[in-house]
Image (cartoon, rainbow over all chains, first blue to last red; front, side, top):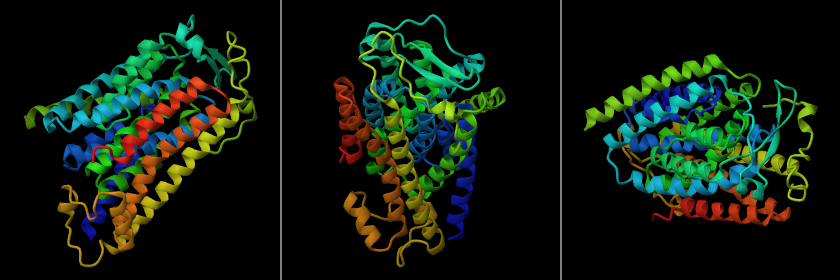
Length: 281
Length: 149
């Protein structure tokens, strides 16, 4: 059994690193799991996606517990937008079964490149000013406050352009279900850019939603047979350890350096995935 | 994960100036409960997965089974993929069946969290959010039960 054991141990260690890096960058480690398992370990992409979607639940639920307790999460915004992401995730899981490997590789590479954009723009982000509640936000009472450590006080904020954010969230759900990632970048983009939530609230609420979005498609992948226990177990446990450690540090400092490292990793991996997709075809 | 800061424990009361009557009486306990549910689910699932995979690592698959690493990595499943198959596998002493159970518990964790949120919004008489959360729960249950067949 040495072969299986060594294989699982290596995957565990790699998953710890991915989880740690992802959590510190505030994007979740899930986005690195599929490239890791396909390019690094030569696994079929659909089994990589199956293991990844499981690890996404582990990551986000572990981190979400810490965020929720710290009052950074807007549960009302999160629950409203989960309507969009869960329907999207089910759509994505069904569509994934219809696509071949090279298409999935190329889509994955494109999503990775896209994830780089909010990472760049977020390098100097704080609390947005002059935001007005839209009609829906006012009706549903979405505006709230959050405790900002660096400012040392409760910061009030409002929520804008809810329908636009809702639409973007459906797309985020489809991408999550299709590629087995949390699509945290898309979720943060929808809340950050469209709905103008403060960055820390966007990140925390995104994490809160990722687990639920992932669960919607994970059940489908699980019973379809795309979740392999010898892969999903070490990867989920490793990412959980890495992400929990990373989340403990995240609330304390907003780390530019880690974001820059993550950004470089994303670009390199994206090119690799695109190249693989083109090569398979 | 274990920091304590009294300044962070203040309830958020004056958060909705436009809607003084729409603010939940206490968002604080709800967040605490959700936080517990998430941590409990993930911890339980993590322990079950770890036990299953460690026993598998030490003992290997159930005696008499000859599934190679190649087969495991190419979609060969040691049990029938159904809730009944998972429990039959555990009964037969297949360590990987325990891993399937743990992975399934992990998938159930967010579902548990949403179910709690339905209840908590209901208790606060936030009917719109109770309905929204109930619909999300419905979609999750359909996916997790394996509607695909």
